[in-house]
Image (tube, rainbow, N blue to C red; front, side, top):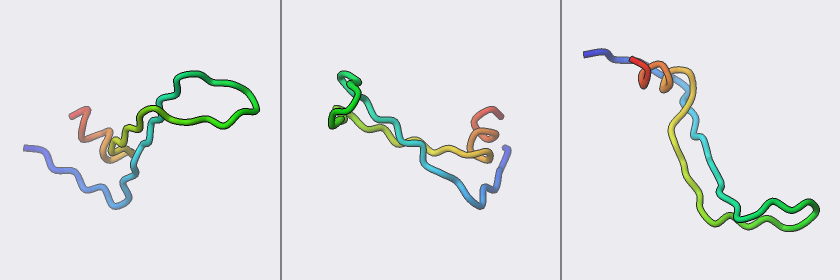
Length: 46
């Protein structure tokens, strides 16, 4: 068992757009939140 301590994790937010148009209002069709940061990424790799 491997335990990692991550004092300052972050949340990675990914927005899905139907189309990207310059100068217009963008509306997300879906949002995804994933834990991220160095400590979380190292734990995933291990």
